Image (cartoon, rainbow, N blue to C red; front, side, top):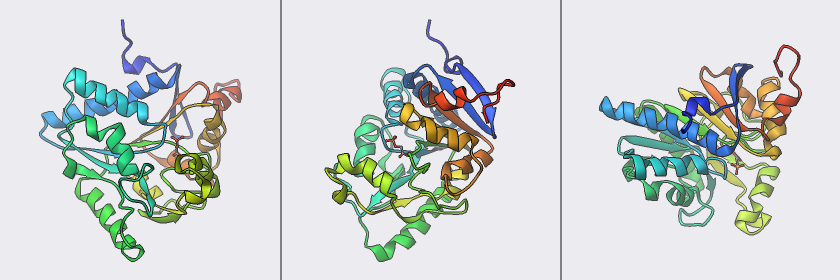
Length: 275
Ligand code: PGA
């Protein structure tokens, strides 16, 4: 018998206000998040309302999108009432570039579900520099006009970035143009075919934009994320690790595989707390 998504996590603990859930593997964590999204999408559809999703790119959320596609194909999940806002986009970039997040979202989700294309929002990497500030204000307005984000999906970068809010990004930041950190650019170098081809800038929702979401679900998999996950959950709240700002959110979960949770488990004290 298949276990229900709520039974999938092996450990479920609240640390510094973050609900930390550890799963046997990434597939179970992805299923859990996708099932929560699908339940809200269906609930809102029954009520004749939209469901507003904040979406992320990178390798981490691909499994969530795969599961949503499966539910659409096999279980009749419709995304017609879904409105999406992506976290970020490189700047400058053309939407058909292999590394563009427009292309990523089409190839990993949008081309395989029945979402209405006019409900998709991704920061525009094609406009001239002098119109980006106005675009960013408009992006914030579109999120507000949609009623705010119901569920925001996040990955976490090795710098502790969420979206492209690199170290030094404050709690009150809104959607804006940012410079990319060198570690982040290095991590993207293979995808661009060399560091010198990685854009130096990006447009990203700010930390405040992200914290405005009603629910936040951060996924992290693999031992290379263990150290930054520990800092995000256990570290003092500071712009040195922007993910620590999530500690102040009213409904935030970190969904981890065992490798990403490894440092949280290994420094657990006798009372079971790890921070
Ligand atoms: P990744 O990136 O999912 O490719 O690890 C996460 C991030 O940088 O936010």
